[in-house]
Length: 335
Image (tube, rainbow, N blue to C red):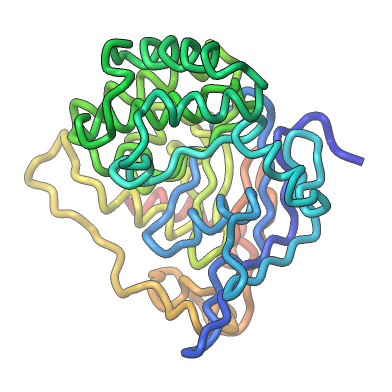
């Protein structure tokens, strides 16, 4: 039975890529859920497994070499694992839409933009070609592009306008869940702000839930209600926006914040996280962050910490809290 309190509910998600050079462990035992009309920020370094998680949710991980294992994968009340290929096609684009990372390559260069928007309307909404074209032009205007440009091709648009077209495609059928994979990465700062404002306005207008995949904590603070921090394919800390920003608990999350420039003190030195992420082809016995962690103990090298609840909304995977209950308080005093 599905839990109607959540737009999606994932338990025990594992994704690995079996290649000639070895097995790449991309996602490892991930549990994640989100309430309706909420925005979740999925944060982490490049290679943390954020995009792979999104692709696995839509069953878009290529097989081979990808292998996906999951105890539970429910989205919009449906068990995605049990859907046939045809049923999946009906869900993608209608109930769940994805805004891919690079607007430069997300659009087909040989089709007019109006046709690319209208395609999903014809398939999912069963509109006639003429009605779909008219609705597509309305969607272009909704994202701030004149309908007079509807018959142009992708190469005739700037990066920001291409991203707006991709957003129009994603919103065409009023999906219940939008997965936005670093939608502002290829855009300059001014256009980033415009696109984020547009996405917030449209989300509120259509009561849509959203996953915002990003490594930019500023974007998270701007648009997200909840945050999940990923490291080596695992959730290491999860909570409300206030939990993560005001009551940071995991040393990796702390490192992400310390890596940000201090606007109030321009002389302050950045504190980058030392070292590199471990090789994804190797599964560490203990905590994967231990080699980079200033608080690591002996048990961190041999025991993998489980994600445990600290409050009703806040979870963290760090054994330091088990060996020292006042660990967070002591760290705050030391700062």
